[in-house]
Each structure stands twice: as C-alpha cells, then as structure tokens.
Length: 132
Image 1 (cartoon, one colour):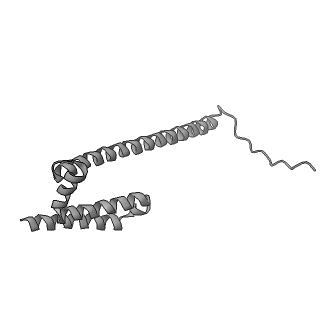
Image 2 (spheres, rainbow, N blue to C red):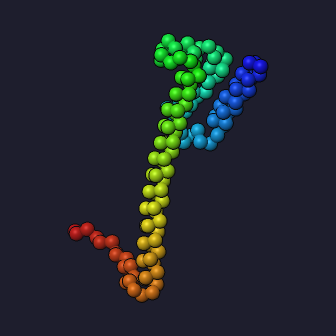
Image 3 (tube, rainbow, N blue to C red):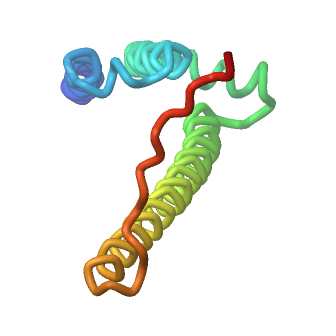
C-alpha cells in the first residue's frame, strides 16, 4: 500500500512539473519564483520517498513533534501567502481597470459633446518654427 500511494504522489509531482514547464505562464514568472516552485516540487518528491526524513527535520531542527505537523504548518503559511498575494494582485488589477474605464468614459463624453456642438472642435496647432 505504501508503494502505491508513493507512486500516485510522485506521479502528481511529475504532472505538476510537466504542466509548469510546458505552460505559457513560465515566461512571465520571475526566475526566483520559478526556482522556488521547482525546489518545492523536488522537496515534495523527497518527502514522498523519505517520509522519515520529514519527521527527523521536524523534531531535530524545528522542534515540532511530527513531520506531518511541520508540513501542515508550512502549508498554512504558504496558503496565507498565496491568498494575500492574489488579493494584492486583484486589487491592483481592479485599480488599473477603474482608471482605464474612467479615461475611456471621459474621452467618450468629450467626443459626444463635440458631436452635439457643446464643445469646440479640437484645434491642431501648426508646428512653430524656431526663431532665426
């Protein structure tokens, strides 16, 4: 049974790696994030192959009773980081969209008011020649 779950978990890690490497998002992602994600996948593969190592690291380095507890704490931190990062990115995107919509609305209103004759037509200024 242990070998079956290890095979399934390793196949999942390999699948994530393939999707990550072949995906289009990789070119836009910072190198540090790419390296961190690949390191994360390799650490996952190592933890699947050597589950006793996570317990040793948890107990001797971090002072946590079990490796599973350490992984849970790490996942909580990673989840909070991911949610916060997504929230900040979404907030920035909404702000840019709002600014764009305002700009387009003002431009459309100016065009409509010019067409109605409420605003003077824009004048094109001839380029001035520098004094001789």
